[in-house]
Image (cartoon, rainbow, N blue to C red; front, side, top):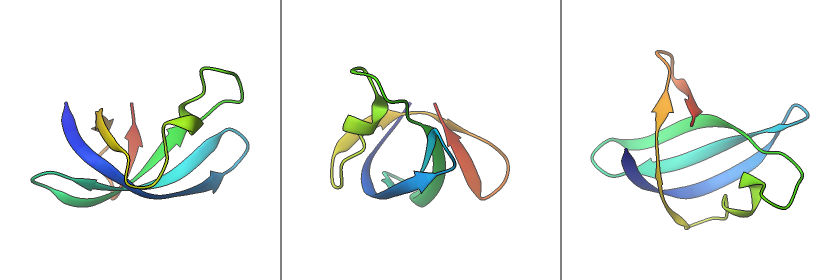
Length: 66
């Protein structure tokens, strides 16, 4: 688990978002997050400067937010 902040997010494809994160101890990380459209959508959590605890995976520069 990592702790960090959302810097910016923008739509990507139909049900995803590109998210720029500032992660404690790592720095800036770009990730793809699946968002959804229901009441329990992660879209409401991805607000700028919102502190989050999250995990990401991937070997390339663009990670997948889980």
